[in-house]
Amino acid sequence: MHIPDALAPAAAFEEHLPGVLKGTHEFRGELTLIIDPADVERAIHFLRDTRGLIYNYLSDISAVDYFDSVKGYGDYGDRPARFGVSYHLYSLLYNRRIRVKTFVDEDVAIPTLTTLWEGANWLEREIFDMMGIHFDGHPNLRRVLMPADWEGHPQRRDYPLGYETVMFSFNADEINKHKPYVKE
Amino acid sequence: MATTSKRPAALEIPTGTENALGQAQTWEGSLEDLRGLVSDRAITGETMLLNLGPHHPSTHGVLRLLLELDGEEIISCLPDIGFLHTGIEKNIESKTYEKAVTLTDRMDYLAPMSNNMVFSMAVEKLTGLDVPERAQVIRVICLELTRLNSHLVWLGTHAMDLGAMSVFLYCFREREYILDLFEKLGGQRMMTSYIRPGGVWRDLTEDFLPALEKFLGYFPGRIDDYEKLLTDNPIWIDRTQGIGVVEPEEAIALALSGPCLRGSGVNYDIRKAMPYSGYENYEFNVPLGEHGDVYDRYIIRVQEMRESVKIIHQGIKKLASTSGHFRSDNRKFVPPPRAELGRSMEAVIHHFKLWTEGFSVPDEEVYVAIESPRGEIGCYLHGTGGNKPRRVHFKTPSFIHISALGKLTSGHMLADLVGIVGSIDCVLGDSDR
Image 1 (cartoon, rainbow over the protein chains, first blue to last red):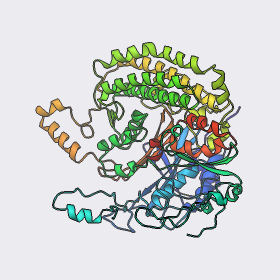
Image 2 (image 1 turned 180 degrees about the horizontal axis):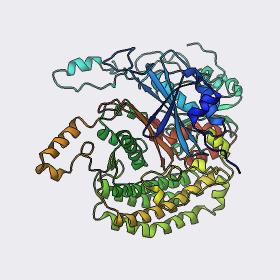
Image 3 (image 1 turned 90 degrees about the vertical axis):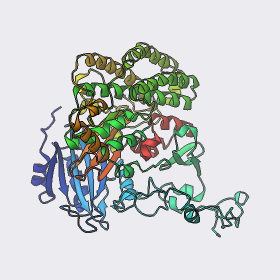
Image 4 (image 1 turned 30 degrees about the horizontal axis):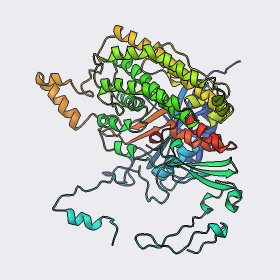
């Protein structure tokens, strides 16, 4: 069987989908392609099905919140938006990994990848649950880890970690007042 | 309160009851939320909806399955997880890197070393920290022991689900010995936290290697015993062959990994594909299945146990010839040994800085994946430039495999469900994190 030579992903983008690639980044040998949220499905479909690329295995989808409590809302350093969503793809044929990254704000939805891999279903649900990022066209975008009636998205950086005040004799009455004990 | 019910009148639950707090209680749930997830026949009441779990013994933890049944045939299966969600990823964001290692143990509690390993590797990649050769060999031995530990629990519980009680007892006898070995290494049986960024916590203890060699001496015979009980057993074959079949293309589409993917014949083992910790220097085979059914996944895991024994033997040989420490000597990341504190002022400073502030990592992201006993466990780590991570996300195999349960079980009998759930080897601590 003849296997076509592996292509450089960035060059392939320039040739076949000019304008889609907004930038590349390399750190410790990991290549990151940066694209717009609207292009996610198109670009990853291209990466999956193009001869010489064949990134056919979906390893992971992760999201990160760039909110910083010191800088406040709206200032995310050199990042264009609040959230970054990273798609980690692997090529079973060429044995290499790639990261596709896109930046979104709270009100922007990303096209779903469930049309390409069914396995993306729960990974996207988890990101919706934890970060509150919406995915367009997802068949079942509900919470997966948190209870269905939970408020807020726990993995956001402005979501407090939460703790219980330690009870001492001087503050016991105050704490007991707010505990949800069963009333007589 | 007054909802129109589709139930027969005899099954009607009285309305207007109050709970202990005096609040009005509704017993009627609505099926509207399920529209589109179950077939329309369930909404009209033609097929039956049945809850399995979250406290059912054969769901291996707190996994709830909402089943739609036509007689005994499963029409659809909706897994529901999150009962064991402990916010580990959120908690790690408030801890320094060294302290976060202990939290990773608690995810996949049957393979704690794999979790330590993937997190440590992510930190090492982000900081560019070196790992001495000896530490890498010790890590490989630990990872393979963890694989044996995890596969033994899987084999025992899986066989018990399908009615073979005695295998469980034998498997746990051997697992007990492995836990004793872990105790010799790290002082803990399960939550070892033994693998740390830069190497391992301490060197092998004197009694570890003799005990390990004793174990390796008799363990292959024990695997033969399990196989005698199961592999050619006609009941076992009837219950497992042709059940829960996944085609290779389907397995890739569902993003399965580990034995579930290799059971379908897809040759993807990260130890071979992208070797880490020196796995390229070991000789071992990657068992592959043909049919992608429960039986093939069973055979693969049993063969993997034999391969693990081979790897550990090679690891012990390498230990004798490798040089270097069990942990990196880069004092900016790794605390100095306790003995140095009495002699060196610099060691005291490093000790103080590392245990209070911790070390800083760049504001960059990495993704590291290793082959855990269950499949590909990945760690996405994003630093802030400071001493705590901005985001850590674990891609865990159980999470993905449970999401595929609906696809795997539809069309099968209810009795086959426990076999399929067992064969994907899910750990709920792993999936819920």
